[in-house]
Image (cartoon, rainbow, N blue to C red):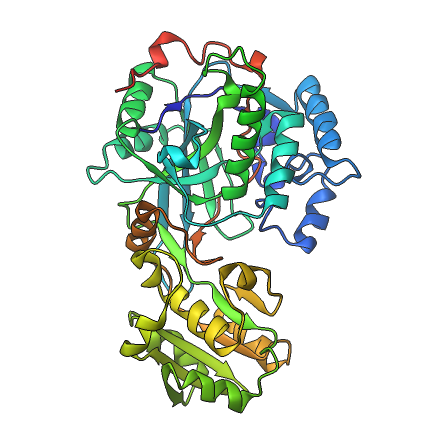
Length: 439
């Protein structure tokens, strides 16, 4: 199954690491324009490598990387290791502090057809090309994608906890309110045990599909030149792996805002919805998340200042005729996209829906209501979060979810650890002690 390898990470030098909060950055696909402008003002922030600002972005990132390496801003660890990465966070309305435990390593960049790394969403070609070009020029991975393995025995957590007794550094609070802590495991026997555990498992890609496919594209391009051993660093991808069995793995809901209703009036919208849903007016829109919580195929609707609870009529589900698996058809979001976007609004098929500019994806419930009240959107559809069980079922069925189905929280951050895939960076990473025989 999944082959993982240790790496000699590149990190900010000890003086800069003491203030690591000043140099980390959000992932390229979640950083807002306002955040970017603030981060660009710091000439040493990692955003200059992950989201370079120039006419030729990849060239600018390469020039800056070479400068930082030459001047000691970034230094490479002497020994290969697996990097323990913990994220401490709280959720709104909860007094509990969660700790998502995981580790960063290199994983072989498997093609989807190999059925080792499994995806749950499709990607946009333009975004993949952007990531592949940046990787090809810099041969540097600035942030880890997020993968999930399942281990009900939680064997690896003991090693991670031990490493965390001597952290390398930590943030006070990152852009999303989490506290990030990094440590390293360099014991060859322990690393081999990590390899053995992952070698018996598949990995579900939770977050970072575009970056992963960028690595795949670069690997294919390099392999096409021939004369390869299969162990060159460019065969591998930087991934943050967490245990899907842990209850600190949180997936947040992503609600749907209708920016327009494709020519329908509010009355027409409600009338068409009533063909497929039981539509019940509710007194207070703020109660919608609680009203639908835990209920299958149930949604909140906020339209013209009025709240409604929607629940699909049981007999209507048989009309869902998209060519996909039962695991996907049973998802709340598939029901929403089919019956609301296709049957009610006339936006036919997943491809047309992905391209339709009339829908926006918003995680903050209050923002949904406010944008409707301000006239920035016509309606808000409030949804339940997807469960880890549903994610695993869809991935193992070989299908993908509707767009923006999952938001694994918190996100990993950029600049905490850099990974080089340049040929001369390999050192002794692939020495015999780190090779696990394939079955």
